[in-house]
Length: 267
Image (cartoon, rainbow, N blue to C red):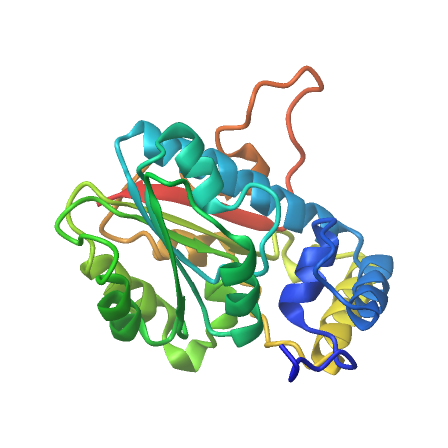
């Protein structure tokens, strides 16, 4: 870890900060706070995405899934995929994938699976699905159902890198009975409907991210996210704002819609 640059903000570390984690440096908190000042919803997006992960993994385990391929892991936080899965089924096997050596180093140091199960870590890029499948197959049995987790990662794949093709190749490698979970940042409001203040805030947040040297993020439409499930059987309620996907019972009413949509589908 001696080569970690603590003077430049890092996307995964800022996300960790928005989740309330401690695996970040002053520069990450400084820039992360500036982004929250102009776009405070980003913290809700981060936290609701983590809550979505928890509900999705619980659902998949309930359907008999005991293997998970989590691509775009990010820095460890509360309720990581293996923790949720192995609470319900201690023999669950999880492979985490990220293209950032910092993330993989943190994951190896901090994420320990249950004795009956397995946790493994692969340093690879989502844009190289064949390499991911090949390396994950050392731990996962691709003749049995797998839960594929693509949470907040497809937005990092530019149009010219064919995000639909990347997802399609990953899904092709899964056996029948597998499940696919996808969520990503969106623009729920049509740009023509934004108030000047909303448009300015979102533009400033994107500028701050770009200036921070983070990986470019492509917020897309809910319709685009729906297209990633082509050929699969969507689980009810389909592709919705992440807080609305099978929310846990609450006494405070319906969750609010946020700029993050996702869903789960069965192959």
